[in-house]
Image 1: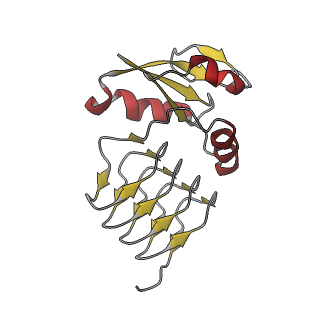
Image 2: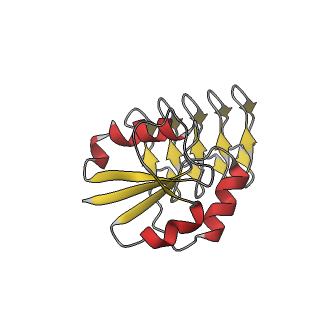
Length: 175
């Protein structure tokens, strides 16, 4: 059995847990617990607090995968850069609709009801939150967080570590 350890135990982590535990794709994985410097949220199911983020390497092996379950782009970037050798799992909710030509980087989290269209490119550790649309040929930089219901319209480009707030529409440029 493969193991998953979440990094970040705040209010975003239960959403990530749902996308893992409700998807048959991850049936060979078992969530072991959560690393968080501040403890974990009381609304975080029953997974144990395993220690601080700096303890991640203690748990690393070929069968252990990590998910940075923190919404802040700056925090995700800091953690990923401090721990570059961890096996990062990309989490894709079973209800996400993703084009076969889209590219999604390692450690990214694609949540409920999202649409990712043809030739979209998502960097590493990107979050596409519930109900967002990443249209064709859009490029989303590493660590960025595309909020609930955001629409990135054809060929839009989002720089690294950006937080695009819910309901925003971003126009793209024609190819």
